[in-house]
Image 1 (cartoon, rainbow, N blue to C red):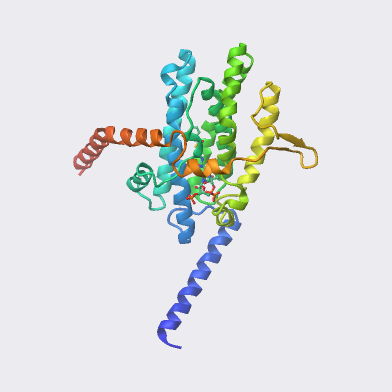
Image 2: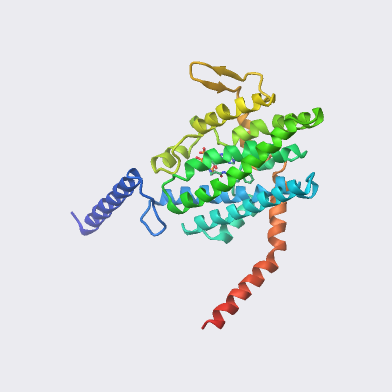
Length: 323
Ligand code: BYC
């Protein structure tokens, strides 16, 4: 055997050993930290997922933010302001978590602004009435909590830790949304009709938030293998449906699904078919509000230039003063 061949065999043995060690750590429930060895694909998957998650938080400020000036009372305005501000914070934690993997803020934002990055399908739908604020808080934040509670146990330390804090805040978001929905459902006939109309519009896009069916989810196998996802898209979606349907029925509210039924054998609420064509269209940029959402983010970034510039100048001054 020649030297080059021996080198190649040695390198493969080292790589196999590293991979075995890495997977053994995950199997023991240890967290993988930024400086640790990790497979290139593990890093790539995390950057993809965490950056998309960060973009979703930041774009997610827009549909609800549109109602801050139109909130029906000062109390509701304060609650909504705090919620939208929380989402900005979630975006910050998540961009930081992605940075620990070597992604830069500039390249992540460039991917968002150029339309090449994805963000949650749900934020490409319009908020048409005040009840939408309640329904987003209740249904959308609840869907997010189920997914994020799973991610709080994921194998990558910085992502898992960001999720713990985010989930705590999302629980408040869900409660304020549920409170609003309950009040409107028990309010005047007009208020009840508003909230029902809102559920009719948000129900299917919320079910799509969990991602495509398991049979059509290319990333799930590797994410499960390495402890990033511990539940599949369909499992989480079913948990959501089973929890939410009885709560909505208790409020005499319904979902827009003539095929919905309870299966006593599996103890699941079973929905009719989800329009996956719509989902793929929306996440590829052709939803009702994709263009508007991206324009808003691009403009905000451009208009915020002077703030970034001032902060950078301040940081430079501080470092000079301390030398
Ligand atoms: N929307 O192989 P799959 C919030 C893409 S914000 C758009 O199953 P994966 C809130 C997917 O990226 C919370 N795209 O993917 C904020 C993939 O495309 P690429 C947002 C989606 O990663 C403000 C392709 O479809 N939560 O709560 O295994 C106000 C195939 O899918 C979606 C997160 O971001 C979607 N819904 O599973 C209020 C959680 N689903 O990348 C509330 C973190 C799938 O291969 N993310 N795609 O080109 C995740 O947990 C996972 O990425 C997903 C998808 C479950 C979403």
